[in-house]
Length: 472
Ligand code: ATP
Ligand code: MG
Image 1: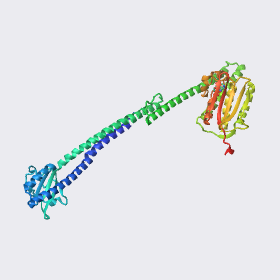
Image 2 (image 1 turned 30 degrees about the vertical axis):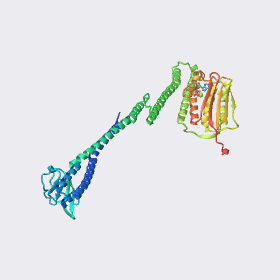
Image 3 (image 1 turned 120 degrees about the vertical axis):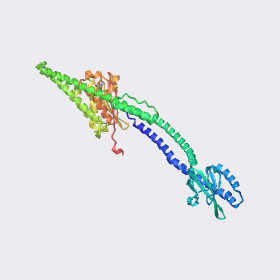
Image 4 (image 1 turned 180 degrees about the horizontal axis):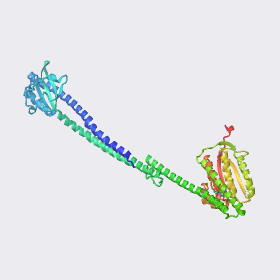
């Protein structure tokens, strides 16, 4: 069994994790550092401008001593965590709040024009610092003349470690999201993946012809519904298979017995076991069995035709009363022999129904054929038509042997014959009522039977009345 769906999900989950980590460690990291730099530059610039305007310029005007300025700057340096310098135009460092960081008192090759149009610079500041530093300056202007500069330096490594601190929060968030995704994955596994796997396994079993596997999913959602549907389908398929097996067994049985007797009698005639004068009798039996086989084949072809419901239907409007009379006439000869009479109670002069005439003729034929077969001599068969709610009810009733209670449901099955009838009718194939049922069902109508053993049987089926044109 392949686990591709789950593998894909797992792979997706891992890719999601890796991509998340890579994004945070590259793009987010880069963007955060950029943002911190910009913020720091603008803060430092604001401070340097304040220090240049309020304090350093006062030193040049003579209102503050260098020490006063220095002590004030030292307080700010702690707050900003940066080096603050006052430097004159030639690069001489007048104030350095953190003298330990730089040994020189003059910046070699100091040239403010290297800053260009910007008020900050990233680098080692004329090779004064050993590490990359962010330097922001503000000029000290007296009477529109630049006297010196306030410079604030901050190592880039400070900013990087600040950024790393922020990134740790991002990593934590990512880890929490990853954990949540893991929980979602787990939920998905239990609610979707495992049920699908169960169903796939069951489907594999069904494809091997093993319909016993049941899918045990009883959730009240689409999965539960799907599992129920598949279980139902499996039950239907298994009963279909069972039906087919039964059908083939019955067909084989029904074909084998007449064939065996035909073979037996022919052999006996050929080898002389049956004397010449007796041959006629056995040839008649052979003819009888051949006719039975012929009828069996005919009926099976007939049933096959109706297999697909509604196919080959030729619906017309016709008078069912007339059809009944015609069918009854065709039985006259048989009835005379058995002294059976018909009573027709037909509604109206005509009763127009909408159906396939030749098929309905066959239904009536099969029902009357049964009624005659299973009736006692000197009895009456009643055929009645009644109209009710746009339907015509057709009933064929006899006072014959009846059907035992436990057989009533089975008479519609192919090849089924009650034990009572077996003795009475050896010619019957047990397919007549199956054909009747198929025809009535293909008309979307119903057929019912009421029978009492030893009293009689009544079959009633419905047909739709034709739409009367003058009603419109
Ligand atoms: P075929 O119709 O192929 O000649 P059949 O008459 O035996 O054979 P069905 O018409 O399908 O088969 O009927 C099935 C069985 O139902 C019969 O064998 C008989 O046992 C029972 N049955 C049908 N109609 C009647 C009836 N009117 N009275 C008593 N039993 C009946
Ligand atoms: Mg019959």
